[in-house]
Length: 213
Image (cartoon, rainbow, N blue to C red; front, side, top):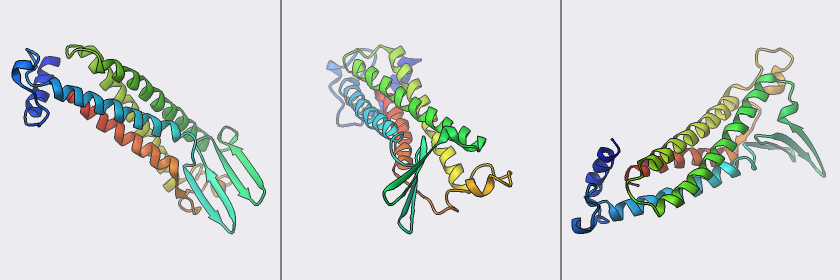
């Protein structure tokens, strides 16, 4: 199965300027040598960037707004209101809204998970640079981990967008005004949201490059 998969990739890559002489090619994977090396390098570079984006998404704000000099940010871990010299920090774990706490806790977990999976992929991609073409298991493992990282990032993006549009605990008369949709409260998407979106896209693109790696 893996040989057929690689042969298909190599057939497609035969139109590439990177294709080498058949005399120098691998016997059962004609014309793959240079293309595979280039693909592996791309996989490594993209995996590094995607992992960095996923890791940084845990640091920066997901939402931010500023009204009358009062700046409010919401990260995956806490919210902070800055008014002059004083800051008020509220941790997600201390939230009284169970839905808010659950959604953001899941976002925290999957984002950290995506970064962790990306780090493993980076290590395996480095190993892959120095291995032969026949290690089907390693190739499939990298693809599987990239798929998990993509799915984890996608879950985070979906949950963040849900909170932006729908809010939390809206069926509770007491909590509903406190957990309105971020959009309705005047928040904008901020750095962390875009980073996790980039990570999600890059994990998917990296997986595509695995075709010829």
